[in-house]
Image (tube, rainbow over all chains, first blue to last red; front, side):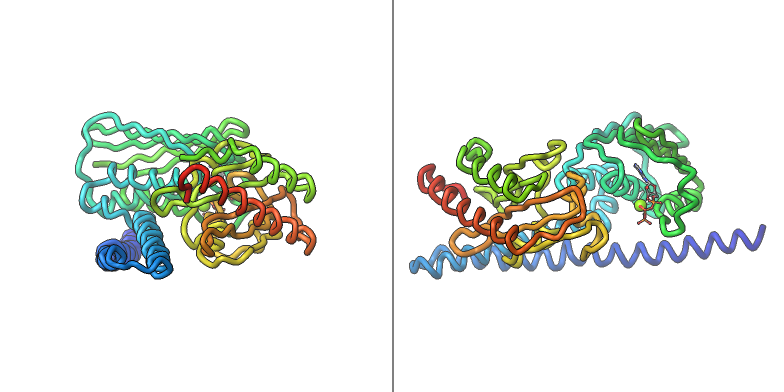
Length: 217
Length: 155
Ligand SMILES: Nc1ncnc2c1ncn2[C@@H]1O[C@H](COP(=O)(O)OP(=O)(O)OP(=O)(O)O)[C@@H](O)[C@H]1O
Ligand SMILES: [Mg+2]
């Protein structure tokens, strides 16, 4: 019993340390590098407007476009790494910002609903829930062969419940144990357990896969 | 935005290429009129309409790498012989492609688009195949260039 408690504390500590580091990189990209690129872009546009020679102007224009593309990619990357919205605004806005990136990346439409009043959650727990949703959506893009996903959040006084359903091809849950290299789903469950919550997965061939997460709040 | 799908010459070039190579999927990505986004504007042999919602990520996947590097690329046995992650290749996932060959489309001598042919089986595109795709890309450059002049600016 005692042994298991320290182990959980260790796991939590390792995960938290990693998340802190990812968060730092994400914010550095978003606020540091991103802001600097923006300043360079603004400067180049001023220069561009003052130039008469066509070929120099074109060249400069290509450069500003390259900067715009890089800025865009940095924005998307930081949402995937650790959405800035999670710290600033909370879980739901973070999920919304991730879904936008997800749809424009994979072409899969996600219908999101949130019932009940959104409650504040410890960041440590909301990042866990976010990572579980992220892994679920990544699996859907990789395996589900679907164009539509539904995510429902239900907030009550003591609990947040999230269900993710993909209307996809489904798979045999029993096959999970056969593949020692697939750790995504196992990690989802483990992370939710560490928050004191749960993660259940069920799937039917030809109908779709369902992921049910619950978190005490 | 100019409807690429409606330009019958683009249609002809792509369908012709698809038949000659004997592939299942052809698609054309182009940079939008405004802003830096590159999107799939045309596809044939598609299984669904996910391609319409995909914005090609700069430097990622086949199309993103081609736009950033300007060089052709081939995948022979997706997801087994890839650089990067499986999820860096959304068009392969969306269309269940296993192999593809893709080349850049140039405007004003910078890569502004991608022409991609794909199969849903393991395949190595031959020198001849590759040449056909490159020829088709040149044709498309011409057609789109004329359209741009005619329609007052596409890229
Ligand atoms: N939404 C889904 N639809 C269909 N099959 C799925 C879905 N999610 C998971 N699977 C199946 O379950 C297996 C295990 O998924 P899991 O996330 O644990 O591992 P993985 O995605 O293969 O690898 P990893 O997540 O470690 O990179 C997958 O290989 C896939 O066959
Ligand atoms: Mg996974």
